[in-house]
Length: 432
Ligand SMILES: [Zn+2]
Ligand SMILES: [Zn+2]
Image (cartoon, rainbow, N blue to C red; front, side, top):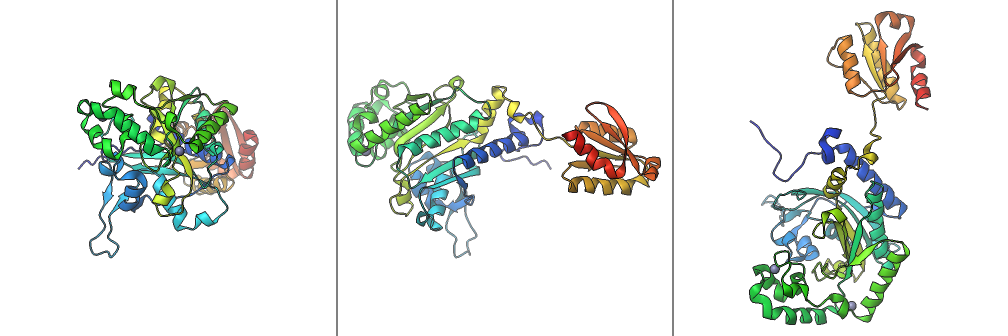
């Protein structure tokens, strides 16, 4: 019997040879994300991986592909009194908003600045860089309107990837207005597209009434003249949205963040308001944002809270790690931890002494391992080399009787006799 991983799910594995799937790269990315989030004053919230489907219907949007086509639904046991439909999370924001409300966090001093990361699930058509099980780094700020927060969220993401060596990214920004100014814009869009509906795809025809903003970023109709000449949100902003938009741009300029205005980023969900952004890698082209985010001042109310502003982003970890690999940016992963000491024993009498030393080393914070397969001296040395250990401590029967061991420095090829009770300090000294 040979069972493979489900299609669209990846193993993250120990070893450089696995490229972007190397678990050490994942650990580094997570460490960097946690460190940058800490510097910005964000704290971690870990929501469950499963929520009721209703949350995503309201919190992501009943008309989105994510909810209509891509949900990983779970049907609980029928005799469970709580057998409502559940789903694996397709993104983080909805669950974080639910957790924020359910746990009384709006009563804390605001804003609430949180980060989260981990797996998410969408039943996608599997293709390069698009998986059914994927991972996101996510930040959200609840309870602040200030465009300086939108700029902070953008800068935080850029700082994360800059620490990985990924620079020269371009931020595309737009403002999609608010419930005050959007109806006028929707109407202008409908008037613009109405004469062309026959030429546009089926989805666009469905979206025309419910969600006309999506006609602007429809990939199937990309290049249609009506799409190119469509009215832009920025011409329809109310005073409040315009002030916010100008504030955002001046913050980006003050921070020296290169940006471009892209009026085709619309998101197209009712609860998205004002700022929307995407971060592009120049080599990947306009269709392939590395990550995106924006403001959603209507969402918290939709999920059942008082009207509360929010802004955040979700960054695909696979995407970032794949780009780093393609760009050959391996420097941040170069200092992968090595085994400090491999303990080699020869003969029955040396074995218990070796095991005792093994645990003393580990207790002292020195990484150490030993052979468990009864290998010969030569095979143990070879194995120690494959483990890339910095030292090999060799315990023969004669040496054990003298209370000594041979300590070999694998990088320098030198070897010396060291009393057993001085091995820890010997290894430590050389480390400094
Ligand atoms: Zn507005
Ligand atoms: Zn279309």
